[in-house]
Structure formats: structure tokens, C-alpha cells
Amino acid sequence: MNPIHPQDPLSAEPFITKEVVAQRLCVTPETVRRWASDGRLPSYHFGRRLRFLWSEVAPRPSEEKLKR
Image 1 (cartoon, rainbow, N blue to C red):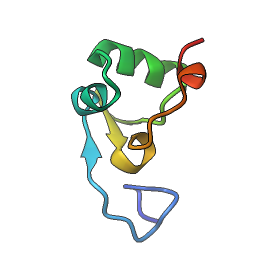
Image 2: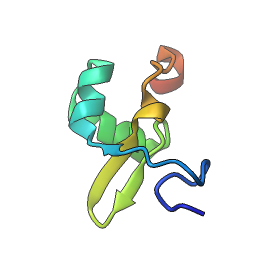
Image 3: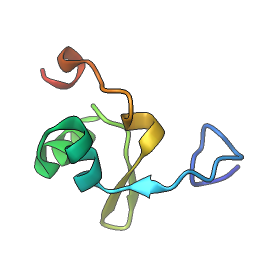
């Protein structure tokens, strides 16, 4: 299985930073980090680096799912 994207062994999708995700969701990078920490956004850790897959954040999540 490909460690890049566990759901799809053939995927070669690049990871994106919290800054890119923040821009896409119109929030701050700190908010993205907090949502990832809370489990509201799927994320991947590489050492201290936090990364996301575009396909998992491209559709805008519902507001009620993210804001509790």
C-alpha cells in the first residue's frame, strides 16, 4: 500500500500545506491547525510538518461540521 494516500494505493497526489488549506477555506493557518488537531480536518504528520491532501479539503466542509 502506498503511504502517500492510504485509501488509494495508486494515488500520487501531492500534499499541501496548512497555508494553502487556510486560503482555500478562507480561514487562518492557525484555525486549520486547530481543526486538524481536533480531528475536524483529515491531516498527515511528517515529523513536525502538518500536511493535507487536496482531495480531502477541496470540497468545502459544512460550517456546522467544522465549527462546534
